[in-house]
Length: 480
Image (cartoon, rainbow, N blue to C red; front, side):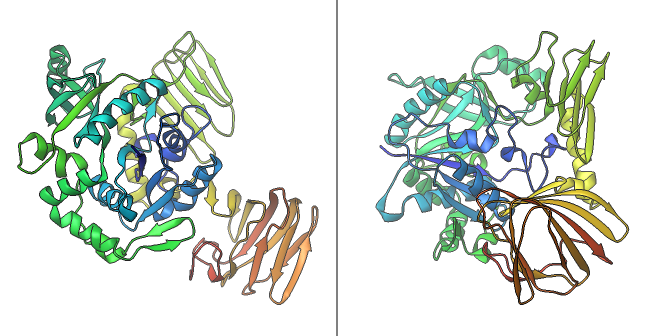
């Protein structure tokens, strides 16, 4: 049996603003431990026999960061790019079709990239039991054993216990997020589990099920994958065909129809999972899974606490001090500070949505912006000038480009830069500088074995990132 980890990495995580941003969402962040949530998900099945390299589904904006984080683990998985978001059912359909090329039919373990599972051994043991059911043709999901009347999750009602030692139950029905009284009744009954969003089934089983339930989704995905295009580490599908695909979730598209008894669908099972699971949907749920001190505080970075209890405090760039407070969330980043009561962290999404409506940059990007060649950090800005700290990875190359509205001064502070200025190519070493006039074609490369660090001072009438005309690019980015 081959197990294929299918990792869905399309979320935005707006309730975890200001750490999670549109261009760098929560699955790419190391919120619990040193690895990002995505990296932890990639490694989640390690140790099980027959595990293939992962198949990741992500969008265009995150592709380089996703590929870089997977490579940092020494892994080589395929990355399918969604040209537009269409929810989880089309994403899983793309994965199932791709998984079956060359006559293969693996058991897919479909996992969101932004969940936390603290007990990996329990999770892998549960996957092993689920895979045996999936190999026999069943569609399996995991239900999280609830420990409180949570109103923020959907629930799964379990039916009769299955024969054998799988620990599974027939899947009776999915129910929407309940009010508190209903959630308490679910908890008291013992027959309801939280919906984890994790699914285990053979690729062919999902394809057959989606063909019965949503043939329009299957047809659109087949058209999108009819002529896939390799683009470096990525696989691109036909944009127009996939954009025409209806949006739907795995639950609505197929799993609820199984419980409704629609003919021609596989049997479905739910296996209870108690492995320290969290979808880390908001700051209060992150506080719950993090280690805490004797006063119930979880903190990271340069934080000082005095007479403070049950508080989450994160610092990225400066000292954060909390005195005489309780049940707060305090999150500092170089360009934003969040202070919220722990019981109202779901409402952080409204701040993120307002920032987006007002077209403020804090909704999309951090001050430090990741690019396929490295990073840049906006250190200072004023009228007609901007200062950035640029770090270029060893061997990386920026595009051959020019700007209509700005000139640039480059000062190398570490490493050696290979600089193209018009027809001239020169090496610029530490404590040396060069000047790029407005309108001149130029390129920056790092020919060395250590990161290249430099300070860039831009000056001009317009300093936006869209003032870039690319002539050549190693990463497939063209035009402006």
